[in-house]
Image 1: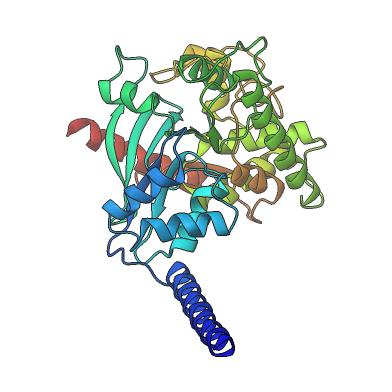
Image 2: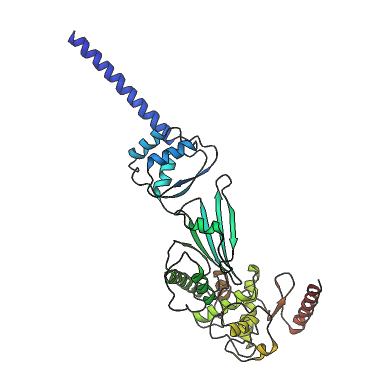
Length: 384
């Protein structure tokens, strides 16, 4: 009898073990399999949250078949205690394994609200936008000038959310004064700026910013990036250029930056100035004259006067020979590369052509014809 009982017990145990193994295999297959989510969602994990709350949110959204299995998977993979606050784009069909990896890996949020602070040549602008999970495209909530009165309520609301991301967008051609004044006006930053960075030494680019970031540290990051760009352009420069130092390369690049907003023209504009320098001709470029008037502190906001074109300043390239003593703005990488590797042309003149670009010329006669065409275009525009 005891022998039969023992045999039955072993049989029951074997069946139980088989069933447990089956449940484990089933659970594992469910954990790694494609999930039931039909449309992408933005999952917000608040600071101080836990896997239980997250699993309930996922169940409510139809992203997981079992919150309990989700929590078991998190514990089994030893990630239950690694939850990171943020907003996460959970795509359709995401597995439990994939979701847990997302919300425990950390890093930048992949959806939710983004505030972009744009420092432009002509204005400051704040854009608040939010990612639409269904289209994975940002939807603008509000856009405003931070210097024009009180900020919209939606900005204050989104600014104070813990998972909001911040980005600084620095336009090509801004001056160092404009950058510093712009940073002073952004209320999510902290710290003082003791000294204005050298003109031209701040890299126009997009920068991820943490709330409360130090202004001086952010400027130092811009300077480090610009130094790397200048060095790279200098090392790759053409032989025989009429520039002797990295500083002269930066000055030339800043003039190119201010003379054209058409990317395809940078190489040609660079060639005009290089050709003029090689021939001993004055650069005769308005942006340098404007810098002599404003010193980079804001926009002139009007045309140049004849008296200003004749006035002797270190930056007036109508009256001085060669390059001005300093850059006149912060050039982008493309302008640095154009200064280092201008196109091979015989152009020594250019003038606006009415399309946003320029008409280039090798001779004064040809240039005068281009100027006459531009005058006609100007007259027509003023008459409309």
